[in-house]
Length: 253
Image (tube, rainbow, N blue to C red; front, side, top):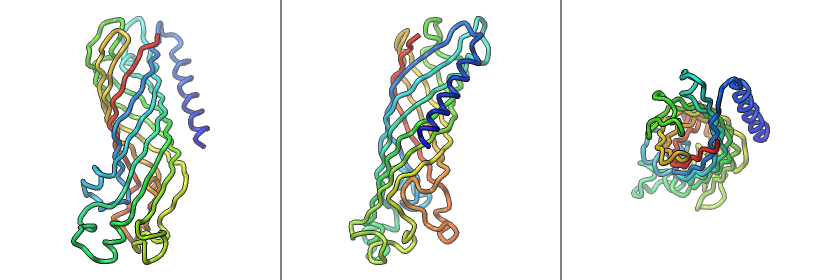
């Protein structure tokens, strides 16, 4: 499934290149990126900021850009297409009022003992819109180039959920809502992305980027937990994440 998705992205990228064959010049760029990622999932209380900020990890990857330049300026010059491949890892546990150290109930102890980990290999296509024109490398242009972005990703994820109390699955170690609602497994998740960022040109062929992206997964298993959302309505939403990337871009022709 992941290989098919990567092939689809490459086909789309080829179509973009072919459809712009009448243009005088193409920009081709490569780069690397990395930064913190925050996963909002079924670990922790819904709406609790601490669960979002502390259930975090890192993301690292590479990307390739293509954009067209015409003999005259048009709206097409304000867009770039980015294909990327990345790896991310997040460590997860429950935070908030239900795991307060002062609580001594079995439920609180079971929640405090639960730990999780999610690793993902991600491939995706992102389109970026630069309202004030692209950075134009050899034609001058502004050093700062802010943009808005949107796209899709496919992720091959691996989950691991465990407890310090022992093997999960029994009433002695597992909160009732998670009995039969966890798994340590691999899976595929599709997602939509939206974000914003900026480039800063540091030379004719070099730029730095700062990028914020929110990502909504069409799956509630990305964290390894999926309690019955008809009974536990606080867990009714699919998993989603936010990533802050910092990177370097090199213009190759």
